[in-house]
Length: 333
Image 1: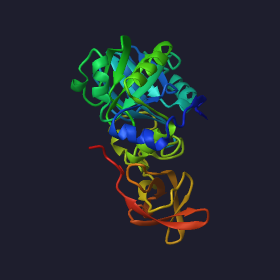
Image 2: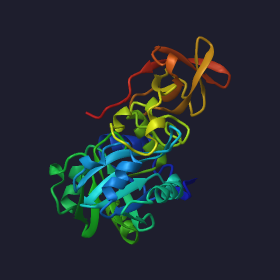
Image 3: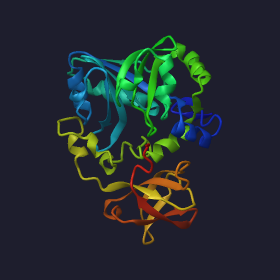
C-alpha cells in the first residue's frame, strides 16, 4: 500500500506481472474509487461543458461517454477527464484523484454566467474497473443487461449482483472492460463478489504497465499544467470550436511525445534523453513491458529531434541506446 492522491492505494496483490497478465488474458479489477466525480446539471450544462473543454460535447447523447480535457489559459491542462451524459441537461465528469480540489475550483470559477449546477459527488461513488478480454463474459451472468450489445464508450444503468449500478465501457488499460459506478457503502460487497467469480484484483503497478503498453498518457507525467497537450498523439481531442484556453492551446507545441524501445535497461520518469550526445528531452514514463518482454518508455523531446529514429537514455551516468517506436506499443487483438 502506498499514498496516492490523498488515498492509501494498493501497488500489487499477487504481483505486478501476474496481475498484468490476468488483465491481458482474462479479467482483472482495479479499485479506482479515488477518482473524482462531478455532477453537471441545468439548461446551460452543455454550453458550460463546451466552454471548458476542447472536444465537442454536443456529439454526446444520453448513455454515451467522451474523453476530454480541461485546458488552462497557458497552453497546458488542468486535467484530462471523461464526460458521461446521463440524460438531457445532465452529465457526470470523472477527474483524476490528485486534481479533485484543483478541478473543482477551476470549474466553479468558469461557471459564472452559465445556467448550471455543479455537485461534487466524489465521496458518494466507488468505482471498480473490470478490465480484460473476458470482462464481458465474466460479468454477463451477474448483470441484467446484454453487455455484448453495448459499444465502446457506452454508459448505462444496470443491476450487478442485485445492486443498482451504472456501467461504462470506457477503460484505460488498452483492453475491453467496464467501470462499475456503485454507492460507496456497497462497494466492498461487490468487490468480494467479483473475487468469488474469479476476477483477479490488480493494483497501481499493473494499471501503469497496462496503460503504458497501450500508449495512454497519464496526468502528472505526459500531461500537466505546463506541458502542451498537443505534444502528444492525442491531437484528435481538440475540435474547431470556441473554448476556454483556445488561443494558448493552438500555439505550436515545442516538444513531441514519442515512444522508445530499449533492449535491456528499464528507464524511469525524468531520465535524460539524448541525441548525438546532447540532451533533447526526458522520459515521462517507463517500464519493463510484461507483454513485450523488453523496456519501453514515453519521452518528451524537442520537436526538432522527434522525427529521428535513434536516441539514447542516460541511466546513472551511462547512455543506453533507444529506438523510436510507434505508439501504442501494444494493441489488444
